Length: 161
Image (tube, rainbow, N blue to C red; front, side, top):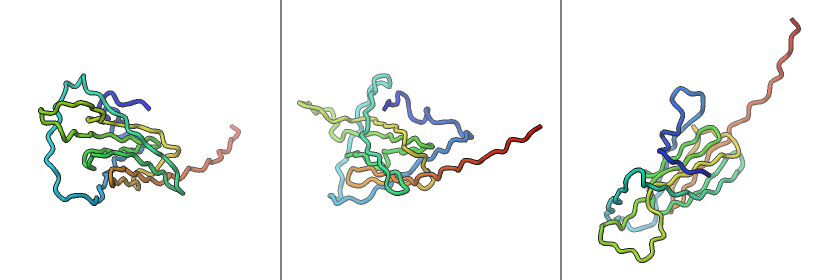
């Protein structure tokens, strides 16, 4: 799937268009970890033209009348994730912040991706974005959206003029 090369907000349609679009709030479920979190330093910013973007792995499947999506997003809080459903397109984007940035680190091996990530996927059915929900538990983002009922075809009678 292609990655965004500009912010996802710039990719979305203008207000007033007929397309169904909803942004879903991700609910962070409690985790069984230590209560106190260490203070995290903000990652040093490179110029905008130098920013890269990571891709997010997704599993999409159907369960009954729902489309379910799972995405492992370890180290990211719900407030740093945005989920957008528009017709049959799902977009997930956010940022993974490096907790170790302080200026004194000298990496020997650096394999973890820190920074913005996004993923856009076409779902197998249009979904009812108004009834969709997203949760984050133990580093796994789960999105559940009911399939939108297909409109039945209607026969149009041809009249002779």
